[in-house]
Image (tube, rainbow, N blue to C red):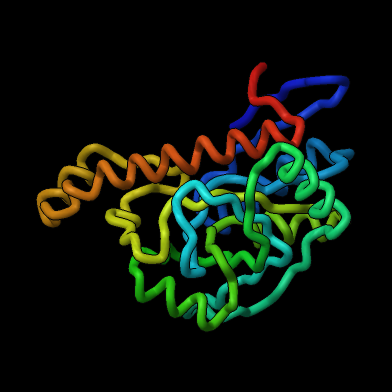
Length: 220
């Protein structure tokens, strides 16, 4: 799923990968096969904070991507993003007055929902934030020798528990039946929904600001 737009003679294609490494890898493969002359690939979306002090809405620019082992959060492999493209991206963010944190981004095979899991991942990997897709996209861009950078925004801080993280399918959809059953078993989660929605709102507004700062537009 996605759409195209053009601004100032520049053609931009937005593609939704879905959630998880397998889905992201397959989507990236298909998209890059179709748009094989792409000059730059940018991975974007929300992430979970691993470094202390980061808050919902904070912008993260990855200088390298660490893939977690299937068994845990320790780093299994590393991918260095395009330094030239990253430097240009950071310059555009600064020109727009947007603050950001630069560091390693961990790609995990599972949601790190608890504070304990996120702290352990930080200690083992040294990454400042975590997602579930960037390493898969990076593997496809590396194979094609395409420049790749990542800019994401924080949705949950280290101290924020991610309730119902296992309810979403690979497309990010949550069925009403599954959600009802989860809330019936975990009534305390209902009180956390407003906080999670506020955090998601901050994250999506920040990523929209970052995309605009980079010179792209989401308007057809």
